[in-house]
Image 1 (cartoon, one colour):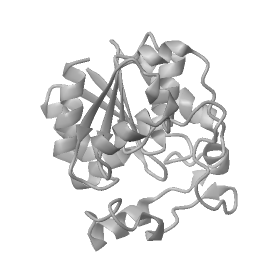
Image 2 (spheres, rainbow, N blue to C red; image 1 turned 180 degrees about the vertical axis):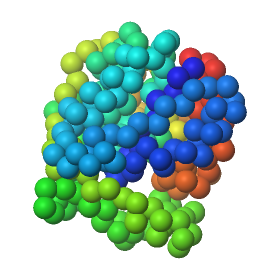
Image 3 (cartoon, helix red, strand yellow; image 1 turned 45 degrees about the horizontal axis):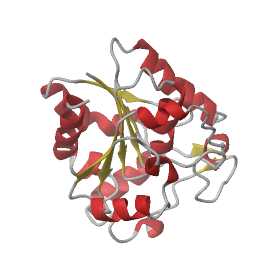
Length: 228
C-alpha cells in the first residue's frame, strides 16, 4: 500500500527517512511529502498549497493510500479525507488531532517576518521532548523550516461529511490511548467524536517518534495499512 507521510510544523520530508526505510522492508511504498513552504523554498505558500500537494499524491496513488499526518499535520491529513473520502483507505494521526471546521490550522507561536519559526525547546519541556537527547534536539532545531504565515494562520474548511466514513488510527506518543478516548468522549475532539471508526495505538516516545522510535512507528503504520 502507498503510505503518504506528512510531517508536522517545521519538518521537511526527510524527517521520515528511517520510517520510510522500515516501511519498505515491511512491503509498503512510503511517500514522504515535502510540503510547500516547508522544504521547497516557497516562503509565500498557503495552507491550500500544502493541501494541493497532499491531494496530488493521493490522486496519483495506484490504489487507495493511507494518509499519515503528524502533529499539526493531523489536520492536513483530515482535510485530505474531507476532499477525497472515496480515495483514502485510512487516515493515521500521530501525536495530534484534527482541527474543527473554521478554526486556524496552526496559529500556535509568534509570527516573525511572515513566518512562524521554531520557538525553541521551552514550549516542549516534559513528555513531548523527554526522549530527545541534546544532539537530537540540536539537529531538529537546526533543520527546522519556518512555517509560512499563510499556512500557520490558514483556516481549516471541512465540507464533506463522508470524511467520517474514513477509518482513523490515532497513534498516541506523549499521551495515552486512555487520555485520547477521554478527550474524544468529552467532546474536546469533535471531528473524531463523529468518526465512524477510530482505533488507537500506543507508542513509547515523545512527540517526534519518527526520530526516536522509527522502527516501532513503522510497525504500527504497517499493521494499520494491513487492516485498511
